[in-house]
Image 1 (spheres, rainbow, N blue to C red):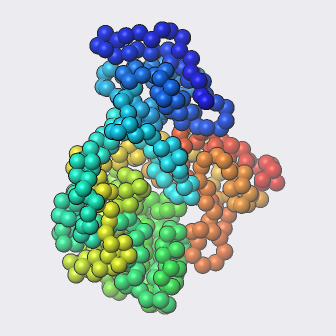
Image 2: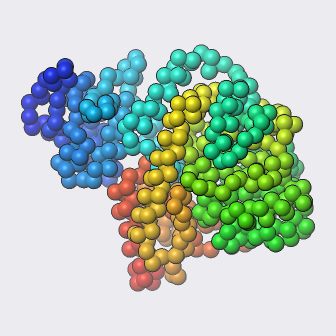
Length: 476
């Protein structure tokens, strides 16, 4: 059990609130991230009655000073507590212990602690006001619960398509509603598209270093992948032209903005060159625009210059949250939309109405854009941290990428690095998962997002830098 110290007598606040400015949790030294330890201590004190409904917690800076930790760690702890329904924030007044949620439900710590570090995750919001805005969307879900438990259309109704159109306009796209499909995440959408356009034994083209998801989907469908050579601007047009002639592919797959894992963004002139080739050859394009909504000024999607050939997939996993499992897909034509509906109906029946409704609600009230802007800001901060901590090492990075693509120094092996970084709460994936054809080189994808806070991330980056210093036991 986590105990707390309360040095002063709890006083009654003039407006009926309880003031406990001297609440100070004792944090365990068991490796638990400090922000979670604070939130857990708060939860325990609410459960035991030490902190009662209406108790005003210490200001974040004051508690940070008292505990001798960074202000942002306390901010994240309060945000975590708010996401569990333990506290509420009032602008200009402070943070207070909240009443329990409807029917006395308590946070499920096992569920909230589950995290797949193999995934490239965005950093999680820490601002209590933003989390409160996100939670308000659940009021809409609750009010419309029965309707959202029914079977609905395979590609979303007009209300959701209009919200999707508004969101897609952030990428400079203005497709007709008949070409918009609300789909159950990018992964399921790509599976459905491949099942439509490629048969077993066919091939599709992709980047030589590519997203592992497309590898798994292609394998499932019995479709082979042909990797196209790349430079610092993405796939090479000449190599693309040659591969089309040689392999007669059914489609080209690209992740053109903040490419996973290399962080490359294909510049406008290269995009136009690629579009010119696929337009001439009539080659369909699967454009995975998972990260395109994050940068402030990302190049226009290839779908803009090749609209009649492109399946543009604007997933919400990276720019809002993976748990939604929603993507906004723009098809090459209304006819393609109907075909996609049939394919998805066979695979998944429909996107989750609850997730779809929540995404629409957040887009309509501006919460989705707040989340996107937070991710943009936080990724830039974390990339800056990584650049400073890993100075002298060879890696690809970009201002709003969720990861870096790190080339290991001579003598270091990716398996050893991954083993030595175990328990650091940072996802490290070897180049084997991303390489199409040939042997993988000594690269790793180092993820900077997820639940890890800045303090722990900073510590882990410095530890990794130490491991890779010349003369260390991993580099000989």
